[in-house]
Image 1: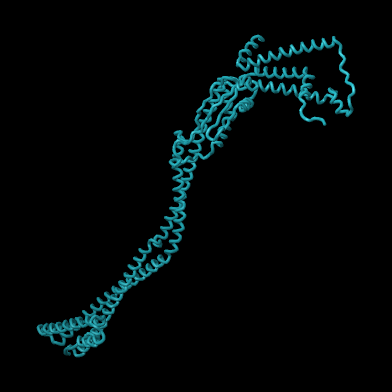
Image 2: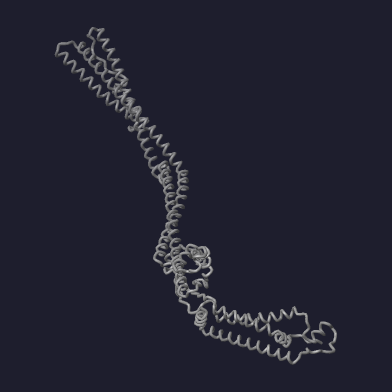
Length: 550
């Protein structure tokens, strides 16, 4: 049974068979790697570490208004840094890419520099900035300039965000103040229109209603009193009219008698004190002395008694005067009657004037009572409208209170935003700090000898072995008895070795010796160069070679 597995001898046989290809390929690739490390223009890399410092003022005291995440701000700042304007400014400032500046456009230069810049966010609280360039001094300076721009841009962005937030809140605050002013004007106008119908005016309206009722009761009492007085004056007029009628009858009788009739003429009926006293006694059976009818009759009694006394005194005085003048008693009585008639007529006119005045006062009183009634109805309507007005006022006040609460909250936020903006202006907020600035690099970033040499050796071996195996794969000749038997399924009976002469063998040995010597010298030369590069003396060797060439 045929054994399976890796036949090392077969692979070694292939390498040995085609060593003339393996060695040159290996040496060529290694030489290319050494040449790359020796003659490729060195590219230096400088990096700086930027730490995100947290806010120095506790967040419980001042809440930051900048809510963008560090990643978002880094993206914004990076876009600003990598913009063509900013990169062109840095290129001109540090005189970067002097050979290409006259041959390519500014956009191409900016794109080239953009590829040489690397921003790496290692963790949440710090990031690194790296830059590649051919000059170690320049690469460090440019890296530090980029870091400074990041720090300044972060401060500027945070300040702009904080100030922008404060200005936005200030504009909203002014707008809300205008709305509050409109609400206040609406409430003021509503209160002015329904001043006496507000819920807080209910007690005042009830007080006014009670006062109006009392005034109306007083006016009604005054009106009844005035009407009683008018009735009294009217009764007096009737009495005087009766008296005048009696006096006219008496005067006619005296005229008929030719002035010789005797005495009499006193008023009867209601002017008779005795008749009035009789009427009072009848009323006292049903009423007390405080009753208005009894009081009225008592006033009439006093007037009748006074009038009776006056009549008697006048009659006595007239009789005495007539007797003294020698005039007859009838003639004197006629003169007294005429005089009394004239006086009673004047009394009637006076009473009529008083009645007119009292009627005028009654009209005024009735108008005032009507006005009080109207006022009572208005006050009653105010009281009835108070719930509806109160509900509308509550609705207006509710909207105002909600807006006022929002205004107070917005005002508090505005104050916090102003403090946050001041904090950002004084650089007390979250900021970037360069804790590890870029240093001038000691060795180039490319080519990196410690990595390029092993990689060149590995690539050389892989390429040489790969070519050998590839050639063996496409080779159709037989190289062993086992291969022939495996492919033909027939046994090999005789193996004829190559027939070469001694001269041919000597010639082959000489050729192999010369090639081996050449390849060995090349290998040791390359190894020497590798040693020089690894020890760090490649720059001196390069200068020496360039000096010999030039």
